Image 1 (cartoon, rainbow, N blue to C red):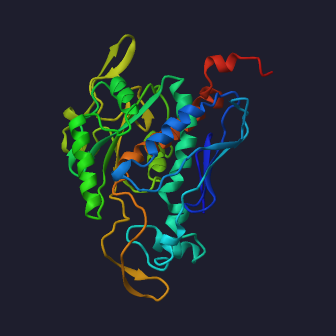
Image 2: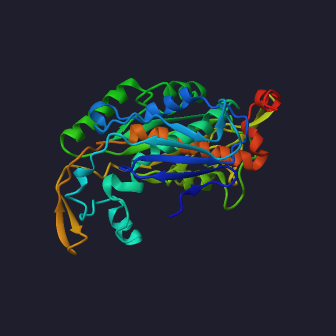
Image 3: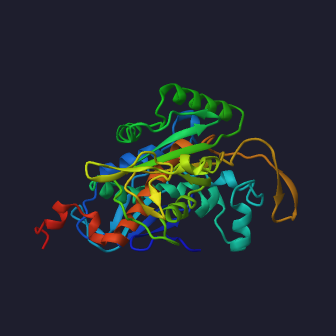
Length: 373
């Protein structure tokens, strides 16, 4: 099993949903980056369960950094953080351990690991692991914000209900990052919540689309072929459980346009090249063009539902019916925004350090300080 992602800045994930702890290792961080634990916890708050529209499983999710940080700054050695699992009910999975849950990784995990995998709560495949991913990504994200690069994600659509789109990106990103429920329009937020609650009452679930925007990315980041900005973001985003699609800029809608409509006209403003539209999503030839990077992520309905489902008994080798018990989310899209933001930060930080070196993530103040020498 390969659990490492990145080139210059890498992240490694470890742990299982019902094991003692989950965690992450960040390697390639420059020494001298300030670690803001309050900031990390604020991003983990955005991933936490929310009343009736989330799982009843509540975890403290207090990350403990056990290496790579000294006196509040990175040391330049691997940064390892762990998050303890404290509220587990492994018994909920005893009766279904042999039954493959539809649209989960139970079947594929069994074939890949031959029955040695930890099946409880999905084991290493569980969305629980994303808590560690959010914590690690928040370190990169704060370093990016100190360089005036900002990331924001809102629920663009859920259960057929649409939020308004990003307009004034700088204002909208700041606004959505302050919201516990990431929807820009208050009426849409109420309607989406109601749809989630309705699905929960029916023992069902809903999915939707997240829209992410990044401002402040310099022009010229990315490679022209295999390490394009789109391919690296797609690689990272598709690692998130429940993600089934990603599109950049105008996405698939650009196929319905003529070239005269799809092309982003250019002009100079204040000595900088800008585009009149942003159908390309801030990327040309796999490289950032200085405009905001914009993409949308498709999140499938949570596969853990309380309706009877056809499945197979992997031990008996026969057909079966699964009636799920336990604690599950009727929707995860509102929690997934924190994960998408974290992965986006890790990917962009990796691309930036490949271009400018690992010291890029330090602010000028941190780079010039000599008190640690």
